[in-house]
Image (cartoon, rainbow, N blue to C red; front, side, top):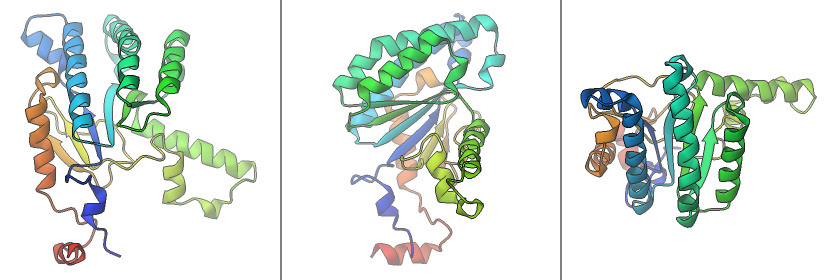
Length: 252
C-alpha cells in the first residue's frame, strides 16, 4: 500500500509534527557584545512566538531541543544559568500553556536535574496532561543514543521477566518504548544557526523527516522564517521509498 502524503499532514497541508534545534543563542549574544545568557533569554521569547504560531496553524506537535546530554560540557556558570532559566520559564509559562490547551511533555534523562527542578517538571506535565491542543515536547538532558538505549533497557527487562519473547522485538515495539511513544514522527526538522547536522536529536524518529536548515540565529528566527520552512516542506514530494508516479496515482 502506498502511503498517502495527505494523511501525514494537517488539513491545511502543514506538517503534523515539527522538530527544531534552536541553535545560535550564544553566538547571537556574542555578536551583540552581551553575556551568552542574554542570548538564551532572547531565545525563550522566540520559543513563545513559535509556539503561538504553531497553535494558530494547528500543528499537532512541536518538539524543541532545549538542552542536550552533551551540553553539560559547557562552562559550569553557563550550565547553572541555563538550569535557572529552565526553572524560571517553567514557573512563568505553565499556566499560560494550560490556559491555551497546550500539553507539555519533557523528554530526556531527568534524573540528572535537581530534585526541585524534577518536581517542577512533574507538576507542569501533570497540570497540562489532559489538554488536547498542541503537544509541546521539550528535550532536556536528551540524546538520541540515550533514547534508544533506554528503550532497549525497558524491552530487555520485559524479556527477562518473561513478559516478552525475543522474537517480539520489532520496529513497532521499539517505537512504543521511545520517549515520544504515541506521538507522530516529525515531518519537518528545522535547525537554526547555520549548522547542518542533527546533533544526536531524535535519531530513531527522524528516519523519514524532511530537513530544513537556516543561517538565522535562533533569537532572530521569526514567524516569517518558520513560514518559509513550512512552505519548503509543502513543496516537497514525500515518497517513503515509492516512486513519484505511485504517490501521484495514490493521491488521485
